Image (tube, rainbow, N blue to C red; front, side):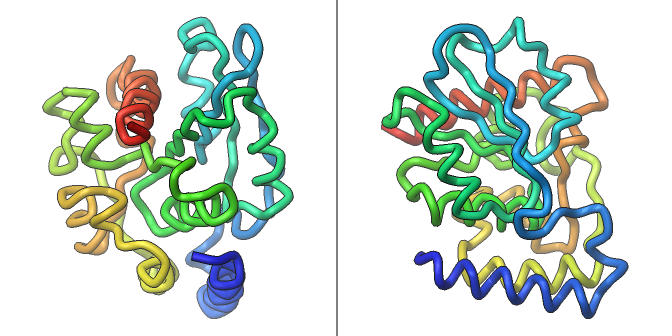
Length: 213
């Protein structure tokens, strides 16, 4: 997918926001929010991108693997933002783990990052079947996690995103089935038990490494 197609999708989302002004409140759209960058110990080697800062701060830096940089990117990623992300890690061959919600905005942010940095470099490792299975908790399976209903904006946004990436291929059959039913699963759905959000990030890195082989 080229950046021209991505730019067209941005414009579609902007028009949808104008038509559904109440539906997108609280969400950043295109480049609305600056990147927030958190570096762990030692020389940065790899990058994990997450859409929710509140989730990132629940993962203590002392538990991060050596050489990790965590970046909070909220909204559709622009070319200048992607250029910053590309230069953060010394190991350009290491996959970038993207941790986002199972919702239209999470998918759109992932697709934008992939369009700029390449499908082989960026891996969706947020709320998806592979990551939830890697966490290995029965209560962390899609059918048991708390969901939220789509707004009219969200439903229209999903139709835009489906033209860029099929949810089944990105999220897996079980999580995408929740999305198809008109509901989303947010990262916050894992906050019901201490330790599950850090487990999400650890599983994300593991799945990203597996998918890069």
